[in-house]
Image (cartoon, rainbow, N blue to C red):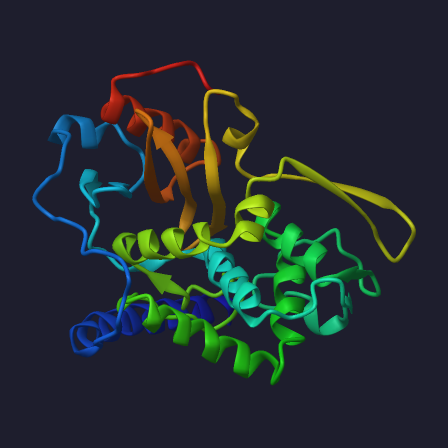
Length: 297
């Protein structure tokens, strides 16, 4: 039965991605960002082959010049990168960030059966839940944020897609706030737009790049959470926006707004195989862009 369900899910995902690609050209959304230039791509085939991520895309956010590109037009599941859109919806809703929200049985992942250290009954502020969702990719925290949005989860997901359209993310679709569903899909070019939009939100910048945070759960235990992006703890990197992600269908993912040669850049790495590969690829990409290869891992 499980094999049958996996095959069915895979077939649905393929059909959905194909549908998204067909639909994209007819969506005309207004976006404040200048179009990203296509031809100005640096890097050779050999350089691209040195990256272990299936998708790599680096853009100068001042000029919108593409600095490196590998499979930049593909549409893929984005796993917990979805939480950046979750955060954007919360930030733009101007909800009370000190409001207390309790983790309930409804927040338990019964799709991927992912683990969580947030026990049922734990009560945290909306700000704390957002902190854990962005910094440590806490799925129950992200789900609780969507569940308690005015109008409930359906209204929250609708707003996620409305925000995507407003940003011109024509090749992106969201079905839930955690990224556990492979039906949350996007393209590298769309994700650059999401990075730009979230970088304009001071709270998202602060929480996504926070190093660690402690909370007290319902059983009275103090749980220490750390950032899933190990590069935020390295002084060689200046990171303003950060989010990692992983599900089997998406592979290991990493998106960042950082600095290269003193200029702000967006980095998108999707479908890396191996937990540390995405960070090694970030180093490789920086080396390719600015000929600088410090030891960062």
